[in-house]
Image 1 (tube, rainbow, N blue to C red):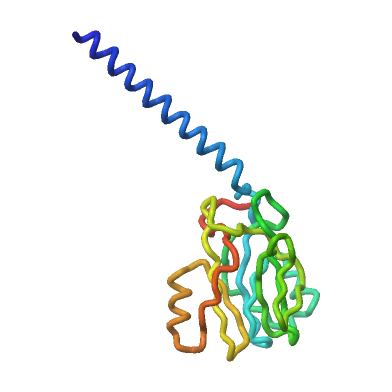
Image 2 (image 1 turned 180 degrees about the vertical axis):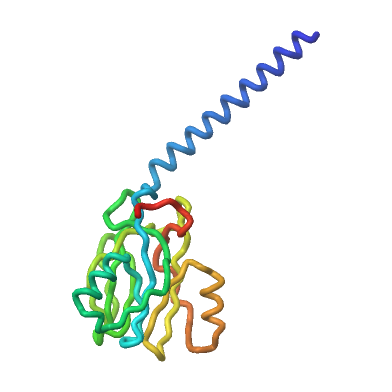
Length: 191
């Protein structure tokens, strides 16, 4: 009787082990087929120009270069790390663009739409800034946008509580949606 019990337990455990292995292999395979490599992602920072009264999201290297080339006439001030995204095209990502208001005092960051650069009345498409996900996959989080029409400014965060706090401030900020999905700061990235 004990031998039969041992055989049944061994059979059951081998079945569970085989089932788990198959599931893990399928999951790993799916993830590899649908996710960009997070180790190739780059840090993006938030900056503010009191001269323009405008917020911006770019990589630290771009901001340093901009300050050097422009003599910091815009007085860009670092506000902190924002998120991770990619500088070059990656599988399963879409490009996101920087659009500048025609007067240069406001910026938008929007993804390509069906492979076409975005267009917004009153804004000029300046350049591809990076690559991100168009949907929430692979551990990505929404990039939350807010706008203030009175100040002609936009602001972005991955923090839902910071976004909610800004909207509740009664200073004219309204929700501007989710332009795209990025990796949170806690993930390993290329430094």
